Image (cartoon, rainbow, N blue to C red; front, side, top):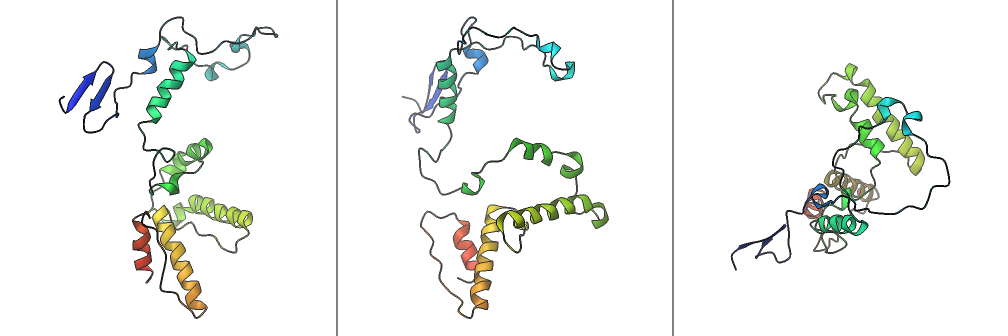
Length: 201
């Protein structure tokens, strides 16, 4: 068998058994007349959507909308999900700091022109809106958590990790018994030992 083997609709590298690419699009998988679900008969009168919403809120009809069975849709997205190196199928120590719920409203707010296009080196007088947003966020987090102070300075997981270890180190030093050892698992993120070294552990 060659290093690369082609199967209709699939692409397999012999060096990586079972890894497949070129999953067809839903538009390519669809066939006229297939349905993903069946609904019971309506017990309320049918109403035209145009009578309920303004024109700008109504999408134009999509041409060649894919028609598939429910299993076709489920299997398609299951195959796509299997391309990811997922924590529910394998062990990996990286990226845990990003595994959290980010509401879509946050993305919309982050794209607001006055906030997203603000230059970090802009004069302080021009930055009052952004500074107020960050100040208010700190105050909200303080109230929610009950903490005396909150910092937004660590902007990434590794930064936050280093900041936390520096705080722990400063606390023990202030108590008069600084510690010199930190326990790290073999599978730790690469920044863990780096942060420990920077903190003097």
